[in-house]
Length: 508
Picture 1: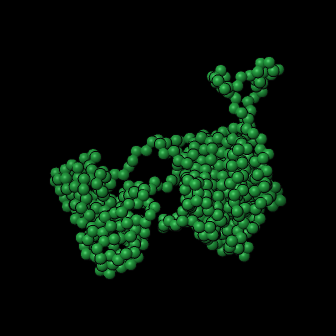
Picture 2: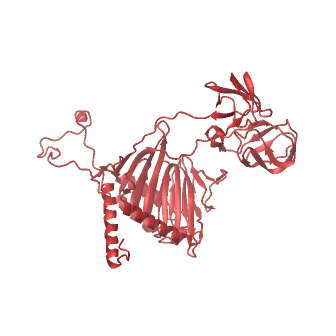
Picture 3: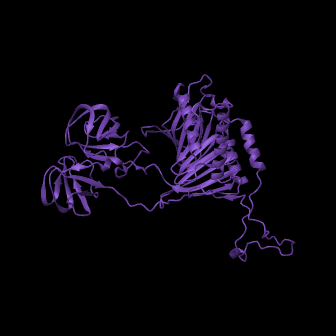
């Protein structure tokens, strides 16, 4: 294992050094076709409808609705088909500059024009992808909150959905042709190979996940300070406000919108003049969403009590912007379950549910801890053979891709046509007498019974180890330990041969 680690580190060093000397730039993603209503979300979370021909770079998200699909073409020659009800993010796409990269002709290459680094994050839903022959220095990964799939020149699909009740993620990776390796969260077995014609299902603990957003609604605010021809506005709280909100009120011209929100400060797209005490309304654009403040790290900022109190249920803070009614808070000397009843954003006086005695300078902290159900510690991983219907579904989706070569579409279709049906699952003993269950035909020579002296076939299902990597057999995938041992042996043999040819002058 030390040799494997050393070899991996050396390979990573070579990869990094090669790219460092190359001119890396942002790769381009182009929308080839779009069906139905889909949305493009920029790094500032501003949404716009997706249109064919649209070009964008890393940091953007694509979201499809129930009846919509989008085909994305990357400038390294790969294609991603975004299925309905899917949210996917192009987290990283950097590529070495090359004269072979021609805008609008990304799919005319039979191999990658230059080295690239790609990481696509599937927040939810399913994508089907095709990756051309990659440069040896390139990296192409599909990530989900449950694990990471490493792609090498292949036709694949990745699907992810979240089980909110158990806080686990269900990830399915299918490989039609080529090579895929999947690393599952919480598994000690390392990368699991998924061979052509097979799929891997994994239920694993969630490492990262997008916070659940809620629809943005109009927010009324009484201005605490006056504005004189200024685009900057400081508020006690920006809860519920989103970039793109239009501010409406007496004396405010139309079209004044929020340009940015940062640390309680709002920047408008044009300067305005308003008096303190003016009530204004922030009206969000259609379809806007935001993440509630209780899910944000900044809500855990500590507050400081400015005046000492004795047995009173009203305290005064230096800043109360992190508090809101219904929130529980804690501080030195506070009883358990102290709850905020009301907050005055101008005087920063906070009314509590019970009287407290506390000194000036004492820090308080909002309690936002939400008890979660216990997460699974040992993920379950199952590898099974892809059935003809599953491959046909992928083939049909690939066939709709306008940017994919006809040769590739025909090849995948041919794979689907030639895939034999899956073996029927043998009925359990308890099901043999149920209506519709098949019984052995005792009139036939073998009675349709399995040979008791023959081990049960594991061709259709294999379960890789998840407890530290014991050996696994069957399914043609081999145990992960066997794979690692084979790699170690091959590397060791190579090292020994090199040492024989070029002995070390130190003998080490």
